[in-house]
Image 1 (cartoon, one colour):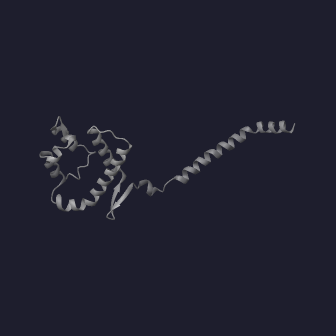
Image 2 (cartoon, one colour; image 1 turned 90 degrees about the horizontal axis):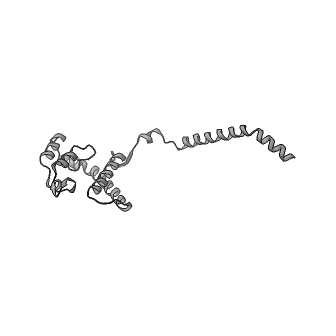
Image 3 (tube, one colour; image 1 turned 180 degrees about the vertical axis):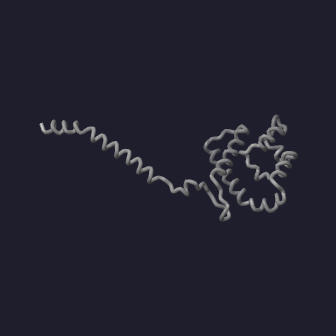
Length: 163
């Protein structure tokens, strides 16, 4: 008898119990989201490395280099498995780091006095032989100037090391 009275009261107050559980569920989600939220500076900050104390490397630069490395592999007809992808990550990382480490030396010695437009025009008119022989710019074993020009005008390709 006591159990049936208890069960009747429980059924009668089921709406209130459900409402309380729903409120607690929503509150726990909200508190969890607030606890995991990063400070605003970290939201905007995308730096993955600092070279020479002040030269920041952004994640987007690394991602762009990695994407380019993987695309070059696909262009050469190679498959990309987990092991190759890890090698490509390491290659891209080293390429980005080396570019930032050597950038002051390049700026000082190799391109001193030249503008970006002048370097672009020189590359466009007379690509170096090692670029002419690169598989990415070959069609049927011959240098394809249209492929080269298309890559030269592609904003996703970083020509900094070539300059």
